[in-house]
Length: 637
Image 1 (cartoon, rainbow, N blue to C red):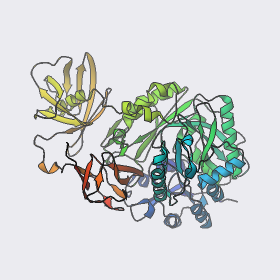
Image 2 (cartoon, one colour):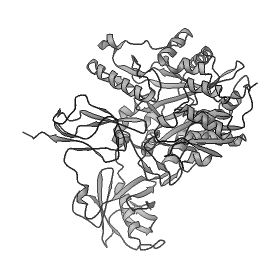
Image 3 (cartoon, rainbow, N blue to C red):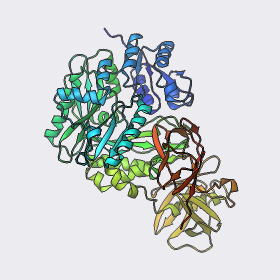
């Protein structure tokens, strides 16, 4: 008989650890956190009853050290380990070691994890179970008729080691890059190829199974809106699926679970073509990031059910009936307009109002570091209809105050309000088509600069400013009374005693400015960070982070023309083959690859010319702004 759990260690960090602790507390369980050195004061550590340090910073030295995690559990008196998602959650050897140590493993049997760990082996199992599959393509014999191809890492997921190939000339380089990234991320460089389905939908089925033969198929989820093959917006149920397709997906997911004698929570993922044909992608043998939308629709706590199954409990023969619709958006500290560049620094404010669920691993004042995924929160809305759930979620995100870091919040709001999304025309190419439009600078940045200048000029907290503003204009020279930059554009604000047409100042205080813009009254909330380097302006028109421009720029801020600076702290994982000082380069050529926050970023040549200097080497840790290389542009004829 499986012993009852009394104390639970979560072998993870961030929002998923906080979320699991919430359920554990509700069930009366003691909670134990583990943490790396950068996470010593993280929210998940503060939320636990006890915490154990894992010395170091990199995941390989901390959260991926199964031996240290088990040692921590035994030392803290925990009798069970929940792995969350990512890190060790799909490591069969770790699951066995947990069980061999006398601890309860909150997850599927190690044999099931092992069977699904390699996507190539998993596909063989699914083919035998009658689950529909895409036929593999041998890269060595691929022809133009096989294009486009999708290269995928056999181990792991999350978009790592994945490349789309549309030209056979680029296949060799793509294979090399995908294999190198897979080896770095998962310790396994195996890559396979299959047809890339244009405008396909990513649809998945949540399953839950016990040790007594019951397997639930808890509806469908659509996860088609993705960036870099990583999900951004998910919803349940997947809209617009015919009943016959929905039933066949449920049946295939149950067959997949039974094929490996599955227990606990898992997800079977499918690619659905534009003409409605489903193909098995993979089975994730863990709790998914997007599990809250299924919880909302079915009224369940999947973590509580995981714990019940791990203790040997039986599920009812049938799950509850679903109600309504749920949509989840992943709020990331990243800049979608700059190749999804992750952001680091202090999160001064995270306030998301409205009738939504917010799962986060951060609180005001916490620091977002370089070592881990840049997701700040998951925001979930549940309503009787899809249209209402989408509207509620978009409104909550639009009204959120998020200060200190560039985020994808505006992109999420624009995505949720985009006609293709509101009418459920969903496919994985959404951001390829619409990213430029969704990341355009909002036209009201000048009004935000106006409000920031008024707040700065307010004589004291609580005092109003009886003045009128002369207006703003975009300029890149000539110092003015107030200057701010945002999204690469500079705004100059001047004061004049005469009203500017269309703008009237109703009141101005240090943190609150009320303007009448074109006859409409608007309230602007203004906040400065502690060292006055950024101003945050939030209003119904949108959110803006403004950087005050100093009247006299520091000459040391200037860099040599052609300098390539690190856009973020990270690790140099690759240097282009044969690259050395004196090498000729062409504009847009990848020179270096920098890894930060679980994502790989290419550093491109800014112009054609000669590599004048190379300061980066593979394996080197670099800080933000570090000089990586210098390209001497070839003279124009």
